[in-house]
Length: 349
Image 1 (spheres, rainbow, N blue to C red):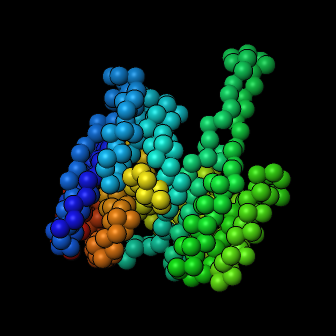
Image 2 (spheres, rainbow, N blue to C red):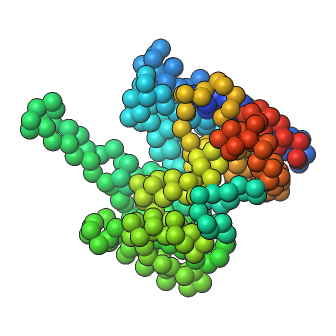
Image 3 (cartoon, rainbow, N blue to C red):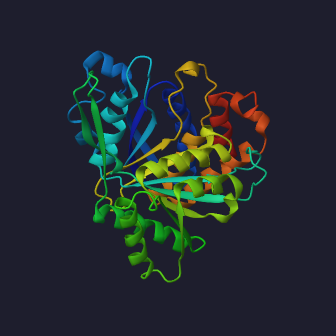
């Protein structure tokens, strides 16, 4: 029997609630499909930052590296710790340190869920570059606090990173509908985004079976709302992918349904799986947080670990539960709790 080692970082706010809930269907699907998962929990969070001055210890990456995967709840408590501190102190160092260069976010409506659009027949997979681009952190501020203050934020695009994320997008498109949307703003950003277009064209020659459509970020943002059914695999830079996947979350019913995978495809480091939503301090500990995005992220994790049947079974069980929205949490109009939703998913297995 296969055994997987899972690192848990519940983090802040409702992250604690949804990670605990997601373990229930994870254990159920593991029992059903004949594998086991042992997990170790890490208290890395804003609370830890307030106690120690660091979101995680100096050897945090070393501690995580022995695990097969990482499940993260949520990071941030802006009333206590600035988001720029919590994000750059925990989430981004893990993504970059473990070279999790693929951020993959699926957007479709689960059974029973009604989105805000008239359109419902869409299935979009956003592939976001996850280690550089606009979130590289290159820059600084000078003359700070004076009338002459200057702030510079430099986007870094390397050929190696752009080529590998585009290639990953091409491979995903090849395994799905054969359609790839590449997102830039090359009419205005004539260096980095034209470079992205050039690399896209070079790779397109290697994938004659994939139809590539170029979109500017503003045009495809509108298309997510007006014609989402025309999109399939969408590949974009760190910033543009972040924005588009939040639109995707909105049209699929809200952030409570948005799952996310931070993947190191080469397998040299563990990959990390997390819901897209934040820590929602206002409802933390009340038992009403929607655990579906976290459970869906667990399905992505199982797929990445090679447990394809279990991943599909868990997603099917999710759909069985969402088909009756009254069983869900209040944000979905239901009367359920975080724990009862998770228990129902486990029972549906």
